[in-house]
Every structure is written in C-alpha cells, then in structure tokens.
Length: 106
Image (tube, rainbow, N blue to C red; front, side, top):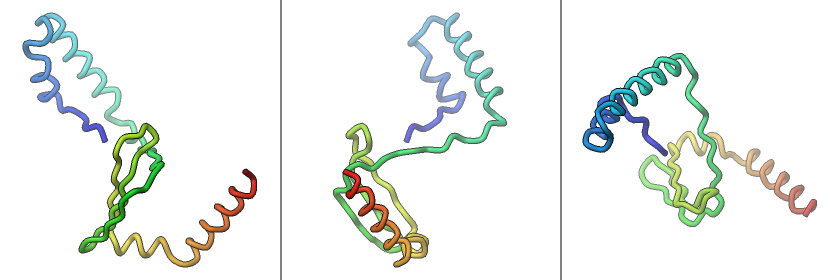
C-alpha cells in the first residue's frame, strides 16, 4: 500500500533534485491538492489476491499471503476472532454454491 507523504516529507524529497523555482511551484501544487482533497472521503482500496500460497494463524491474527493482480507479493492480516465471526458455516456454504455455479458456466 502506498503511503501518502506529508508536506515535510515531500519537501525533503525535492531538495537538491529540482531547481528552486520548480521546488516552490511543486510545493504550491502539493498545497492546492491537499486543500482540494481535505473533505473527500478516502478512496476504497480494491485488491485481488490471485494466488494464495501461505496461511498463518498466530496469537489473535490470521494471515493470507499470495500475489496480487499484478503478480506482486501481497499479504492481508485479519483479527482472528472477527475472521471466525464472519467466516461461519453458512457463509462457507454460500461461497461453495457460488463457486459451483461459476464452474458450471465455464
């Protein structure tokens, strides 16, 4: 997941890499973007785990690791209790039914 830079981090990243005039213009643009986006809802992150290759349960966490839609390593961590609450027998049965329906159409 890409971390959003603070203004200070952005400023430090520009030092010595661009001419001072550009540096000032880029900081002004950064400030305008921040102002425009301050009231917007955060964008929903949508990732696809294409290949689950590792599962781990440790203490109160469940990990699934695999590759994303671009072939890059990707890991997701769940709270174990919450995971078990959501993935109950009824939901697993529903997932199986939907998967069977999908396979029959192929």
